[in-house]
Length: 223
Image 1 (spheres, rainbow, N blue to C red):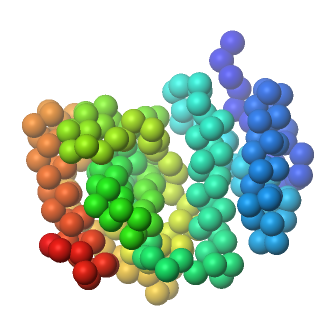
Image 2 (cartoon, one colour):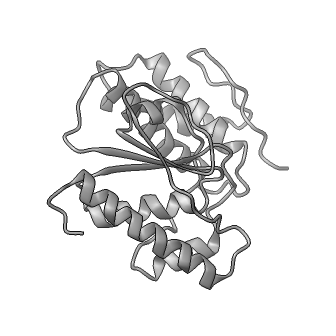
């Protein structure tokens, strides 16, 4: 029998059909409470963990690693929320790449910027209507540059991610607007349905733009 999606909740207790999933999420919430002690309440952390699982479960085709991915997503969301509350102020700029499905362009851009920046820029990506998995051809052509995308997954766009970013780069989609952010739109072909050679061309154009962006954000970086 296929796994049933959990019920949404705003209470401290999870109400999930799969009790094993509930136990794993409870354990993750406990670990995150230690990490975010003094920043968020237990109720807030549990709610973010449960909601993150629910959002990914809504589009997931394969559930083997869904709990682990949901925990990663919840940690990213809590990091962004903590920054937005002023709990910490990162010394490096943060960039958010957004496309519709978070399965192609935004994943390539995030992976390439992360690769070139080497810790000098915090990078996230998201989709306004996330797909089930990252485009297999995208994974292949990015891997040709020595960048591994095999562990990445499409993530839904959240307000806290936009608010936490210093630069938000969209690729054919809308995004929430927060004052004081730098918004840019990159006109790029969608790799969906394209051949390997066509996706390579999109990858190379993204790589050129990412390098220019990095040189702007971290001026000492050679162009």
